[in-house]
Picture 1 (cartoon, rainbow, N blue to C red):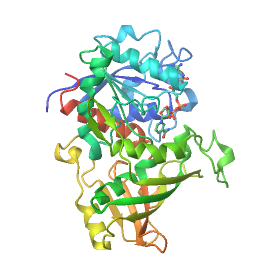
Picture 2: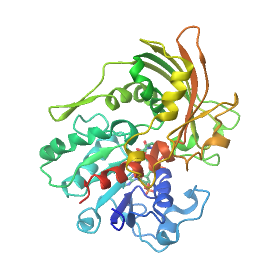
Picture 3: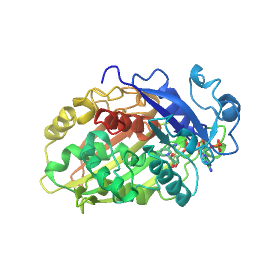
Length: 361
Ligand SMILES: NC(=O)c1ccc[n+]([C@@H]2O[C@H](COP(=O)([O-])OP(=O)(O)OC[C@H]3O[C@@H](n4cnc5c(N)ncnc54)[C@H](OP(=O)(O)O)[C@@H]3O)[C@@H](O)[C@H]2O)c1
């Protein structure tokens, strides 16, 4: 693996998640960004012209992107054949248009690693949190058969909100997680916004994020599902109920979680399950893998978005305030960086997993 590199395109490069991709790919040991794509509105402009004052990262535009001309994701798709080994995709378009765009790239034999929700429900498209369900990559073979491709396929990452509690529930599944209630407190970057572009959030909470509660309740069941006869069959438990709120935080989603078990574990058992948990990315030592995936804070006032969002370069999931609950068995606070672990970072880690397992060769 050490000397191998892959050429990458980023579709939606001018967006909030796309900008994260650009910064994460700057100096990446395996992936070399060679094409930046967006809508026809941006096509033909240099990247700095196209992104303009929408650049929202706290580092400058990477040097490699300064002279790159943005391509049209629709009109220039064929031109990418043979030039990129795979693409990342994070676009703001209608669901059916995203589905069609991603399938088109896959059928051009360009694998797509997607941040979009359009294909998350497709039974032969794996939805991966690399530490949890790397084995779901097995379903790609039947997806390729359906699409009639040799190397083209779509793999997606899950919604950002659930990454603040599902990774913490996962090592506890051996105790039979029966029910979980979660309230999420979600950052404005999750809506592609900054405080400048979303002034209405200052001194405020917006108690509705369209579609988010359904995703937070249903997507975990696909992640905990099993591959059977070329499809992912969803798990039937636990039952999850979610309320999702938009709060005045720039980056980082917090979750207040309440959990009921078949066999209630002790506090020590929960803390030990979190401390000792590792998945494929840690075993394979993937470049973006956090060394310690789950971080527990003993302090009562942690984790906090402002202090803890960059734990392990924003790729860890944090927890705190584990205590017994009068209604459920246990309650705790979970936290993860929504545009790093929850979006672009999670997709880069998924791409590293795919690369390590030979899916881009
Ligand atoms: N933000 C998060 O934390 C987060 C987390 C997980 C998943 N996601 C998902 O990631 C996707 C992108 O989110 P975002 O926050 O980055 O959105 P965003 O900031 O609004 O960016 C949207 C991107 O889509 C491009 N685009 C729009 N219409 C297009 C078209 N017809 N053809 C090609 N490109 C087009 C835009 O290009 P132009 O600049 O040319 O218009 C821009 O690059 C969404 O599906 C979102 O649900 C976001």
